[in-house]
Image 1 (cartoon, one colour):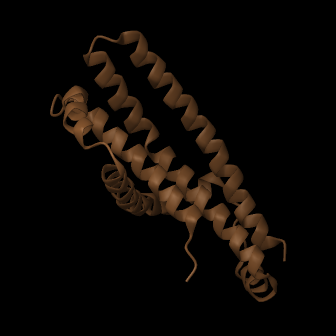
Image 2: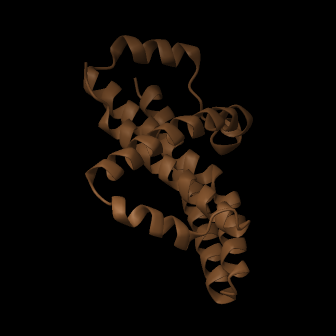
Image 3: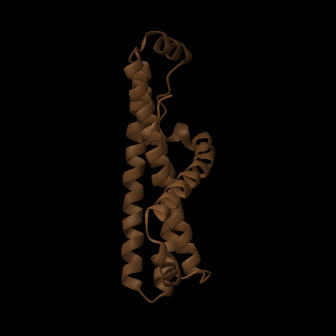
Amino acid sequence: MKVAVTEIFCEIISGLALALLVLAFLDWQEIYVFEKLWEAVKPALGLTLFTIILVGAYLLGVVLDAVGLVFDELFDNRICSDEPTSQEMKLFWNKAGEHVFEYRDNVWAYYFCYRNLFILVLPSMICWFGALRHRGLFGWAWSVAVTIFLMGIVLFVSMRILLKLYYEITKSF
């Protein structure tokens, strides 16, 4: 069995982004403050905590993938409408080599990762803005909100390019 490192990496990145969103929300609502979290975690810093964070991030990424699948059903055709026909798909599966399948799977994994991060853009902007504004850091709040918004634009454009590439790989046979 081959380990899909790209998919695991993308799940972890998505999960870490979701965890940061949740932490910002909890800090904004004063349910849990960053300083208290840091004081609780500082004595346990080490390989065990790092492993727990990675596994937790992976699991959060998998949960976020479920939300992403709903997003795909609602918006996939609006992002890129070049979906291959069933005849093109059949031809692709009959003619393509193993290396093409691997490349296509990697493109799809990165699309999933960017899609998951794109889904988190608006809630992240709101939560980070609220958390920083609540602390009286108005300049930082606006800076972070604008940065996340610009990242959202970059993610959207990247998603379009990756999805178009994914479909073009299939149509090229």
